[in-house]
Length: 263
Length: 268
Ligand SMILES: Nc1ncnc2c1ncn2[C@@H]1O[C@H](COP(=O)(O)OP(=O)(O)OP(=O)(O)O)[C@@H](O)[C@H]1O
Ligand SMILES: [Mg+2]
Image (cartoon, rainbow over all chains, first blue to last red; front, side, top):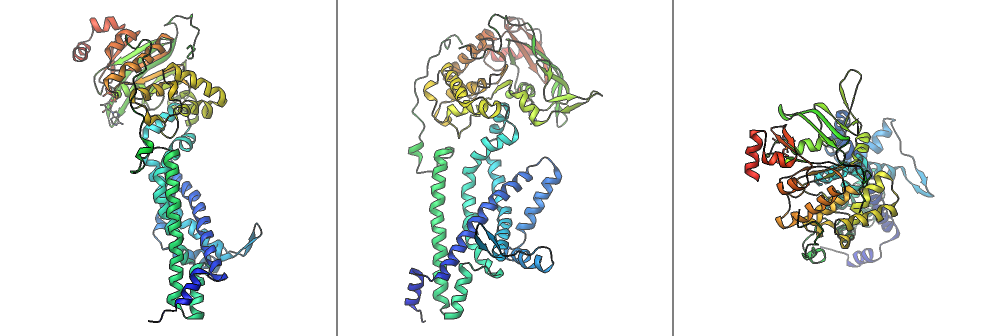
């Protein structure tokens, strides 16, 4: 086996501009699609809980359709299929002074739609995990359904939702490699072009693999940090290892109230 | 102390009716859970609802603040129907969520299992609804919350999370949370049933003080001592019906109904 170590190290330690642009593209698309996917996923989850059967059916149909087809097919349909059929063609545009290629827009739309189906299921399960008594207590205080959701249910659901949402984001960062099929110059496509000009296929894809690993590893730490923050703020679950910080106050003598003895 | 001030201290108990339930019926899966339940609660009155398990006490209590639907009959609060309005042809139509929410602001509900909001401090549990629902200025709501905490003997717990409180303390916070909305009526569903015996006293003491301040209360409980001492009236439910009601002394010593006597022989 011939392995060009110097090529490998050079590309790992100081990758060229095109590779860094690809890495940056991967990161940006992942974050934008995740943020948009969270919004769309929340909407779908709320539609799923609607009291109107037609709305619920629509949400179920959406989830069924999106989860039942491969991302790569969805991307090709959205970008190439729609344009070919004259339904919609993504044009290169400027967003706040930054040129955004049509393919990148299509990529973000496709990933957002794809992930929203999974995200909505996580959010739905998170909402269902909150004790029904919480909703009843809020409603008994005169809160409306929207306020109950916003202030009482979602904050508590959030803590249970973070680990599966973290998984989704981890997957999403790797799914961006499929965007090469519609010509988005993210890290995988850049690696591919470097490979075809240098023939250092093993070396360059190994570098790409390590950068994907770096991204998902950094995310693992960020996710753990978010979970700790939520444990402190939301303060519901107490994962092992943090028990000491959250241990309930020791039992204290009961405050004796006036009238306590004759009750 | 006179935080509840739903009426002037001078007005004596039992003048006008605050809650009037008339022939309330409810079936679940074809089974009658509430069977023509009628009950009046006068302003400032404490009505204790007793009866065997499965009698429908919880269900009835929950119909008063629309946590349960009803099939027929009506419940009036201050002369206005709760949960439903009547169309010209006499049929009942459910009120919108917003209308029901508005009605519930007048009615405090204390649950057997407290249901405090675990992601908020005790203090926020108390000011949240007044601020978000009624639009009370935060400073005023916080001040009131401090008064209420003092009243239930938990001033030192303002900043802790509910999970760091004992059951009895949590239930006292839950009572304060309900009072923070300045309700005209307080409903209690077995407020001490989930507590260790040594903690029931502190909760019942708070409720007794509330009664002494002329809060209108409907209390489902198995604490017969509380009923005997605090209730103006005891209503006995059995198999979805109110079978008997009257002053505690009368109901407990000379029950008119054989089922009441049978029930009391088990709990007294
Ligand atoms: N959601 C429901 N579905 C089916 N049956 C129900 C439901 N809620 C209540 N019931 C039934 O209605 C009857 C009355 O219940 P309810 O909880 O009101 O009784 P209770 O008097 O409060 O009893 P307990 O003293 O045990 O609390 C019971 O037979 C119960 O099984
Ligand atoms: Mg009950």
